[in-house]
Length: 170
Ligand SMILES: Cc1cc2nc3c(=O)[nH]c(=O)nc-3n(C[C@H](O)[C@H](O)[C@H](O)COP(=O)(O)O)c2cc1C
Image (tube, rainbow, N blue to C red; front, side, top):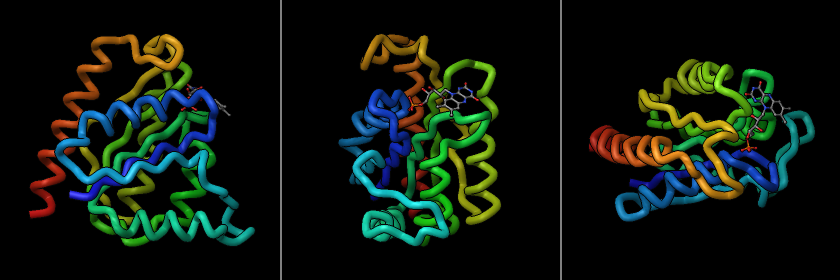
């Protein structure tokens, strides 16, 4: 099972990146992980044309069996850099399985992940793991996840992602 983990925040101190890393650690012995840190890619909006990095990312996306999508909440919706990837680099994803990990400023924005659900389901008939990792600043101490409950939820998320992801491939 080839899993692409997409950390889409461009923030130097990204918390969704830390969540993606934790999921990658939990999955590493059970899946072949392609970890994408979008901070290392040059991006351009749709009408500016694709960069070479975006073409490379499109190939990585198409080659994966399933996806863990790391998002940051921006204005109760998906972050801008993730939207660029969805609009420009999501090819070969039809019907594939995905899970969402999300960092936000506060608890009240938890429904923002539904926008990502809508895009993936309506545009590509993708199938979502019915469990979202949602964290806020209170769950972190610097670069460390300090909430034991969140760590347990990441563990559960990875276990379910692996077992359902594998079944969907057989
Ligand atoms: C432009 C912008 C809009 C934001 N809007 C929201 C919001 O609507 N709700 C919320 O809870 N946090 C909001 N935040 C806070 C981010 O979700 C929070 O900083 C989160 O940690 C970002 O993820 P990252 O650390 O992976 O970059 C916003 C941040 C930015 C920069």
